[in-house]
Amino acid sequence: MEDAQLARLEDLPPAYVQALRDQNLVPLWPSLRGVLPPKIPTRQTQPTHWAYAAIKPLLLQAGELTPIEKAERRVLVLANPGHTLEKMQASSAMYLGMQLLLPGEWAPSHRHTPNAVRMVVEGEGAWTTVDGERCPMSRGDLILTPTGLWHEHGHDGTEPVIWLDVLDLPLAYYLEVSYHLNGGRQETKPGRGDNTYRRAGITPSTVFGRSGKRYPMLRYPWVDTRAALIALSDDQPALDDVQITYVNPETGDDAENILGFYAQMLRPGQTLTLPARSPACVFHLIEGGAGVEVAVQTDTPRTFTLLEADTCCAPGYTGVTLRNLSADQPAFLFMADESPLHRKLGVYEVRA
Ligand code: GTQ
Image (cartoon, rainbow, N blue to C red; front, top):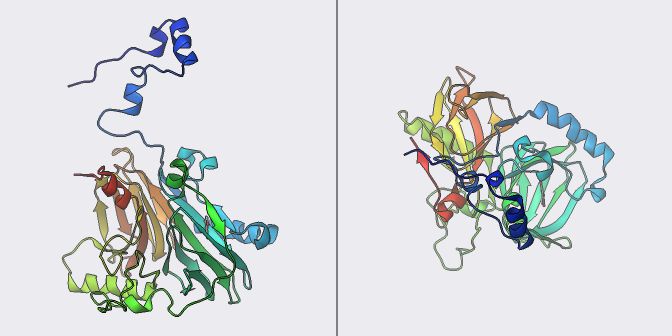
């Protein structure tokens, strides 16, 4: 059944509207369709592409313009114009930033309520110490810095290091729970974020060997993730969606509470359509090249070409088609979305 046309604000006597306003009251019906639109939500998130070739020189320039002491985190934020650039949002719940650390620099220890992860884009020799565990950073590695854990970044290499930050900062800010605390240099403990949980299906079995922590594994090395994707592809030749989820190895839960993290392999020449789902999604190209078609309007989809280290996003409730641009090499993508949050809220949907 079609929705009835509801009365507008202009249909009310101005004196009445003012009398309401004076009491901090608002009539619902002129705004009802706005806040509860028919069939599909209104989304500010626009399909947006950020080219690494454009970001890198500007980020290196930031390295000359602003010393690390004056920045704490030297980051260019990948902002979605649909939310206005000032809001620094990629989607309603996701924040993206490209962070630069120069040789010898140190981004001091702090902890905060938003959850973060780092996806390393280029450069060797940097490390992030999370909760006392010093995690080496290499291209494609995923490092967790979940809510409340101390983290600092340092760099002993010789070339600039750049990584992608993904945080649930917009959500934390919206909830009025976003804040940080500063700390001193962390004492490093044994362990480097990944070794204890390196092999899938195997975890320490003793009470003392198992951490029981909410975040037992803090680093997911790309060499292992890449090998897992290739093994999955070889093992299941009929499987279209060659994708892994980054999980807590002790429980199988999503690695973090709010945002979900995944790696996707596209076989040579493969085209893969992901169904429309409620969460917004971010795509970051680790290796190869991919076309990304975002079906915001099914007749005129937005199409991006992702080259290595490029990033794009798609709003929720929107199908996305991924195309490997190479006929003889696989392509590898890192993805982030809002699925864990949507599942917890009970609003997660897949639409055929
Ligand atoms: O590296 O701790 O992009 O606190 C934004 C906030 C990075 C970080 C960001 C942060 C960090």
